Image (cartoon, rainbow, N blue to C red; front, top):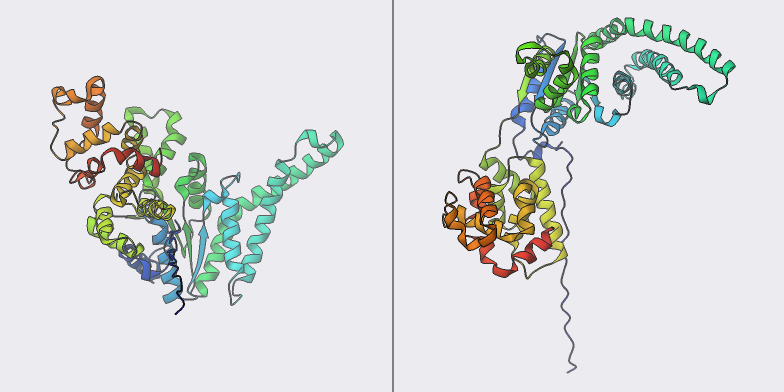
Length: 423
């Protein structure tokens, strides 16, 4: 019998990283955003609802506002096909534009022109004619004296004056023109809905210019605006824009809220996520994560879908690099701190005793109120005590991260874990 050598081949598991793209498939709605999408669709489809109507979807960055918009759009397409002209506009992608109204009008034109049944070709053509006039104005304004001679400049100035008059005339009649086109859609039993996302990523002046344009030119019957934004960012943008007017009595801080209240008739505030929501989300998006690590992440992750994805992606990358000699639970904990609690992670990555002392505090082995308890830290006792007092909060989710002293459990290998995660 011939002896045969046996070769063991280790099969590498694929790295299943997650995109930050918003969810558009209801089957992957692990955070139950349909709680917001269903009433949104009800409002948009209710025949008796009065228009114009602006709806605000408010929440912090990474909380799921874009997902609400995508899922709502999906539901309109699936259940109300042909009944809506759905215009998607991301102002942040056009942040270099001098006037946000122009790319917004382009988005409206492109949506009308791409209708599969070619129902709105005439409206698209009319809007394009307006855009040509607006575009000519912007092109001529960009011409400078160092590019042409005096004679050419005089000719361009004359053309500019002529075009400027046309554009101003077009803008004066723009609202009436757009209302006429919206009325045309209404006769076809079609509603116009604008989805505006990432407004809060723009500069304050750009945010306000777009909101002003919406109010001035697109406050139309048979038209809806759904604006997703971090309301606090918008409020601060309005304060920045109008703060120079020195409102009396501390009213500057209220101006932002008052401005947005006048524009948005229906506010939707995304509710905070509970631990069960986070657990379902973690389980849904990362089946391969071991159960004990899923449970840990559910307990310590902040209720922000974007940050949860970042933690899991970072973990899979580190896992793929391969450090079987290191504790996976400690690595996950450090990645949570790095992404969610950088004010803890980075000082502790340079001085590991900070993290070990804080761990003792959370496990009630160290009273942070008495400097005498920090004597073992010698010359750094005041620094360590200050760090622990600043970050010790037994009511926070950090208590789960430090439970049963996992960092002390790896002993002198803690620096190796920090090195693997990054410092």
